[in-house]
Image (cartoon, rainbow, N blue to C red; front, side, top):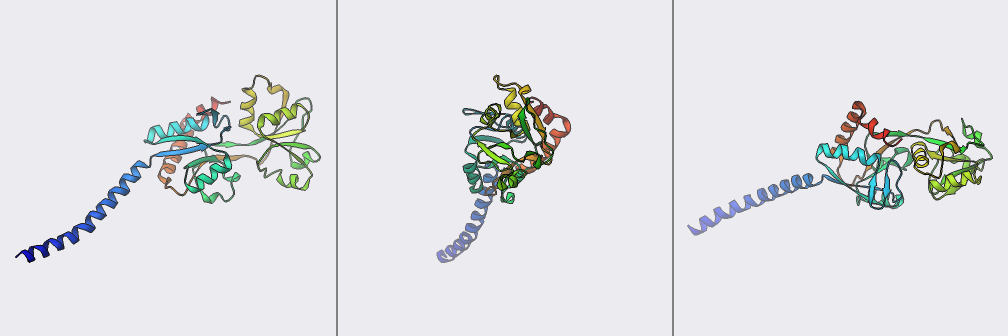
Length: 262
C-alpha cells in the first residue's frame, strides 16, 4: 500500500514540477515586462539647446517637454543621463542606456537602432557677418572661403568640397567659439543648425542678432527623432510615442512647446 501511494505521489510530483516552472516563467516575463516602464534617455553634457538645455544636473528644453507630455499620459517614467556623444552611442548600442536623440541621416548604419517618428524638422543655415554678407544657393558659392565647423561633426553637403580643398574647413570646439571666430574675421562663414544658433544668439546678452546675416541651406532639412537600443524591447513605447506625437501635432500642443523656445 505504501509503495502504491509513493508511486502515485511521484507521478503527481513529476507533473507538478514542469507546470510550476511554466507558471513561474510566465509570471516572471509578465512582471519583468511591467517593470520595463522606466526609460533611460541620454544627452551630451553641453546639451543641444534649446532641444536639450543642460545646466549642471538639470536638463530642460524641447525634448524634455515632449517626453513629459508623452510619459505622464501613458504610465511611463524616464531618467536622463549625460555622456559624450561617441561614448553615449556605444552605450546605446550595448543597451547600457535606452535612447538618444538624433536624425537618421546623422548616423552610420541607422538600422542598428529602433526609431520613433519625427518630433520636428531641423535645418542648417550659413551665418556670416552682417557687414560682409555671404549669399548661398549652392556649395560652389563658398569656393575659396574658410567655413567654420564644429569639431567632430560631419557635413554631408559640404563634406566633399572640404575633402577636395575647394572650401577650407576650420574646426571650432563649440558653437560659441564659431561665432566669436566669425566676428573676429578668422572665418568667412559658419554653418549651424538654425534652431540652435537662433536660440544661442537670443540668449547671449553680448551678441545681437543684427550682427549676423543668415542664409538657408537648401536640402539640409532632416527629421529629429529618438533612437532606441535594440538590446531592449521598447517597440510598445515607440508605438505609444508615435501616436502621441501625431496627436500633439494635430491638436497644437507641439507647436505650443516649440514656440516657447523661439
